[in-house]
Image (cartoon, rainbow, N blue to C red; front, side, top):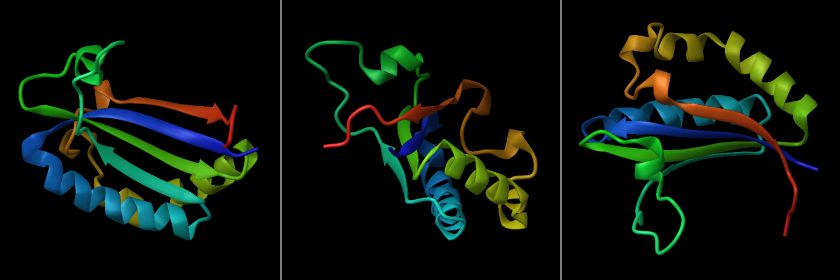
Length: 120
């Protein structure tokens, strides 16, 4: 069964173009190292009729937008192998050597690995 790394992060709207550029480069690198799929999705419809909308959950600041991202792998072992290669890739390290220069608040990023429960 597949494995997914999922991310939820606050991105200032003024930084979306920079984030998109960085994410496009990162996606290419992850795919080159074996990731099956790589997606970066920016919030579009956050007016939910039930449940808690992402902006409230994330306690977004004025001018921020949620970005939901995922990377798909064959398995957790495959994820660990691919991510190890990606983290050693000098292109990733060169993209943003200082976390303070990231186009989003790294401290407020949510991340986790997920086993696929249902694949329809």
